[in-house]
Length: 101
Image (cartoon, rainbow, N blue to C red; front, side, top):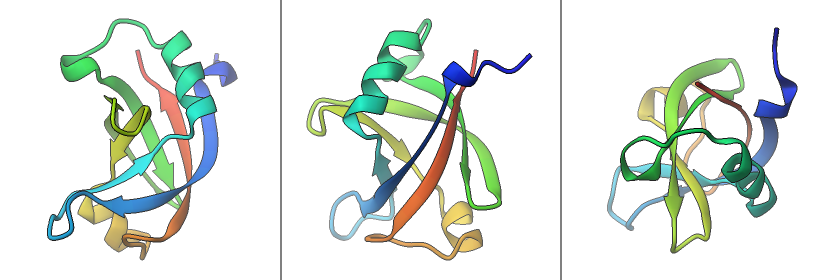
């Protein structure tokens, strides 16, 4: 049985960590981050929360990481996803996140 209270859909801007870096992230909106904070069970390393993420037709397993700087969770978006979905830094993308046990 699927628990829809653990599934979140939203749009967010893809941003580049450090101007010359290769790491791309999205920042989870504060209201969604608050809900995830309330629902997340035991955390992994660095306070991470396991999720399954979907952008367009591409799904993958990854983690959200708490960011004091962003005051929210942030999530890396790997190159294979960016290439498959033709997106890059500065693009607004639609995401679906599902919290994993």
